[in-house]
Image 1: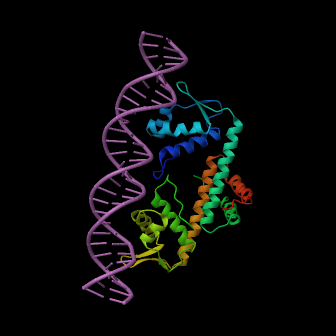
Image 2: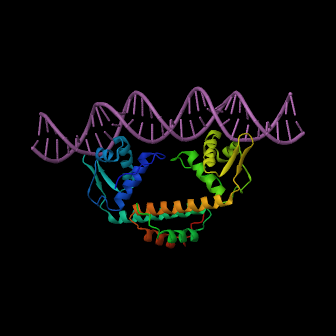
Image 3: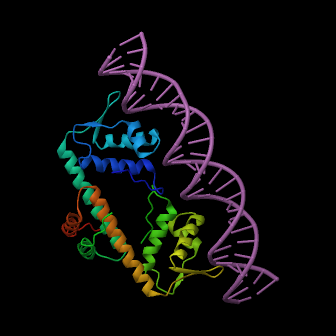
Length: 124
Length: 124
DNA sequence: GTTACTGTATTAGCAGCTTAAGACACCAAT
DNA sequence: ATTGGTGTCTTAAGCTGCTAATACAGTAAC
């Protein structure tokens, strides 16, 4: 799974979001070693400074623990991870309702649309 | 309904989106006079140049017609408006599925989550 | 003709994001 | 002791977005 960057938003914010997703979905297993700044910067094709800024946010979320000279480790508190994952899903869903409301669809109509569209295979 | 601006994205893009939403939902009725650049800039609290940039996008969408010195008019093609509204709704729904997929939810689980969350009243 | 309102264009300056190129302190392995 | 890998910090440069202030051309009302 590559990093997907679009130009309209700050890169470091997009990287933070996608790193968060990788962690809560187990792409970087709980308790395991987290990749180095320079390594992920190379993978994403961005400057190490930019990746550094993205990573520093993960600490605030308590998703990683930083040992100044030893690298980072993914948290091993699986309850925190699962709770964060559910919370992010709820936020996305509320954003969806909010966007649909701006288009004139109430919550029931929005949910119905999701039910209808889920069948249409938009496989990448 | 006020304009809602967040700092992380270009203001003119956010304004364009919200103007589009207003038009397709009939907040500015089909065929009616569209507000002036300086007027909407004042309402949104942004520079006229920024609002100008946002409005110029609406012309590409054929949602407004610009008469160089007479102001702008909302299109009277209601079929275009309704089709655009449905298209925007489908796009939002697909974005929702995409975001949820990144969190480990397939399309069925995402739709189910929308069904479950739609009852919770998050009234503003 | 004068006034007031349109959209549009120009110039300048400021702030934030990103990159580039380093440098430093700390730790582990050899 | 040396080497290599950590996170972190600094400085400079370039780009884009946004604001501010101003100007211009066309139209309508009087």
